[in-house]
Length: 138
Image (cartoon, rainbow, N blue to C red):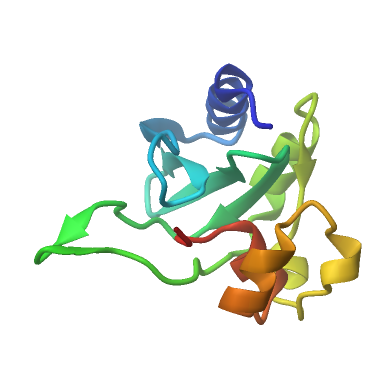
């Protein structure tokens, strides 16, 4: 399970050491999404650091607003991005494992991730590891 304070600390430390600043933190406090999101802004772009609430995994994705748009809850797979400098700093944060965009975009192997609910896997049929770990399933 992700310690929210440790996640925040990891986001702030990564932002500080890579020349960015944390401009938003959204904890996974409802049924969906199942991940915490830390938004880091740089001079010319922003990225999101994400962590499933029931895991110690970290990843970097394109930023997205988590909320209601036109009466519909935003959902769908995240787009994971390469951010080598940021990933290197995140990998140094105690208690977390960073998974790269390439790994998250690879086909999902349920046997390698036994802690993901088999019922969810059967119902939602995630195609990639990223879809299985970071989702809006209810």
